[in-house]
Length: 350
Image (cartoon, rainbow, N blue to C red; front, side, top):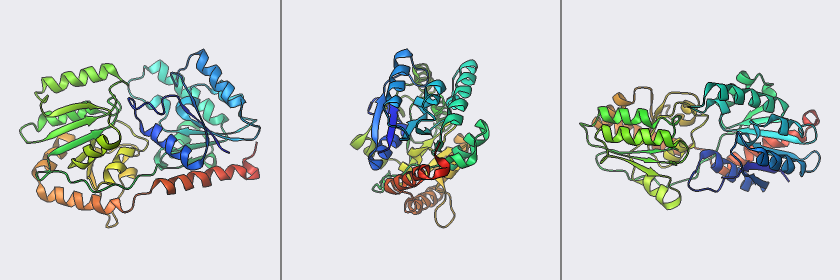
């Protein structure tokens, strides 16, 4: 049985994340022996470090153990101590130093720790081809040890949206990296047009940024049109998607962006930053069209979407077509299982 070590907050609904969804869905599909380790990852205290060391020591010799990179990459000494005994696979959702807002000295330290961890691992899995290429290049890894296993997407009913196409939705933790501040600035520039925008996501990950964003919304006179809704899951989240005309993701970096495919699964066109893995995630409809707008110029793009009915119809048609080409979670899990099976080959055994 595959072991899977995940962060302790994997089931905390107040801080939902794409990484936790990926871990839980893959763990369930693999029938893994899942172990959640609490801690302030990637900078844990001594108690969390000892707990992780004990968890790894408890796996049988030569066992395949998948570890979420948030847990593994900040503690290379703990991971390396078991690297010869186990087949250790580190799952990188986001390189640690890529998180926006980290102090330069801490970012450099985490970057060095992550490099040591990944170089000690038997295999590295990234959540997109872009992320795999970045990890190989940045950390000087053997490309043969790094694999891309993107997430799946659940089938969903088509969103009804509104008649006027003016309801906007952003689903992401409210943090600097997710870039809701640039979205609010763009919305302020189109406040002469009718729209509403709901920002769905955890408000606990970056309280200073949340406070600044709330102030921006008020100062721009958008308090009655832009809502900081907090996290939503289940039926509440489905209802938010169902009412949306445009999904907006203004991230400064993304290694995949699961919420983009969740929107496309509902036939909702997207407006997202043209950065990192986002173009790969959004992809193309079978006719070659892009089911959204990828740009750095959010204000201009929002104005075009809100005023051009023909553009909205074309983007919606492309999103509907892209919906049929998305990979489901069962297929994604089979891909992961096939990748991990390579560890059974003699060349992969340490």
